[in-house]
Length: 309
Image 1 (cartoon, rainbow, N blue to C red):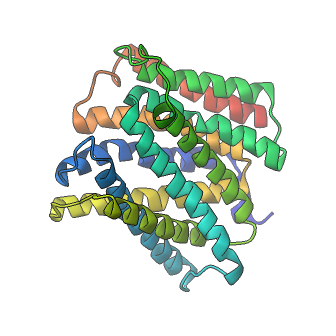
Image 2 (cartoon, rainbow, N blue to C red):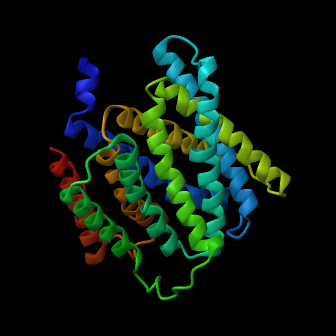
């Protein structure tokens, strides 16, 4: 194991990079809301939302390719044998995940969406156990349950789970999206043996982003209102995906999927905190309930990494 690889497997390094990724992803929640306002996209306009996502991910892919090419001192391009992997990853990580995400979000509550999305951690850990034979210890399972409890707690303010009606286009679609997210983590770990992770991330984003854009445009989606502020926000959102997914993919390459995936429980917690700061939504974040939820997620992360150690 070389020096760089050894550093990337240290728990403190994994924790620092993973939390940076989750902070970036958490900032996407308020950024998307702000973006909808700046680009005049209505909450029920799913196709415009999908077009907006397509622009964001296409830009993210271009940024990953440019940044990776700068550091590698050569233009990143997949090997001829890697193009099929890029397209498969783009279908799962970007297209399937976000088509079903927007479908589900339009037919269920935000509370249910947040909780169901967090189930991708469970999917990732069980898939990694099946594919890569990673050990499912009692400590790891307990850590997942405790972390998931924190996600549920931060989202149940106001009784958002009172309506237990289930539908395929709502809760079912969100579950498919969560599974696609987990499956993409396992695919990245497997594919990174054969192709550079920055190359995989960059080109799958471009492929997936273009397909999402075409779907949005074909179904009547529109994104208008480009100004200096809205353009800067779109660039920032592209950087969120570019930086976070690239770093996350590097972690997945050198570490067990479960050790990295568990940090995903912090996404909705960080999202709630940043929404409180940026959008003034303080009803969930700065409360005893919010602090307990954050503590549960931290305990879950510690339990999974302690059981691995």
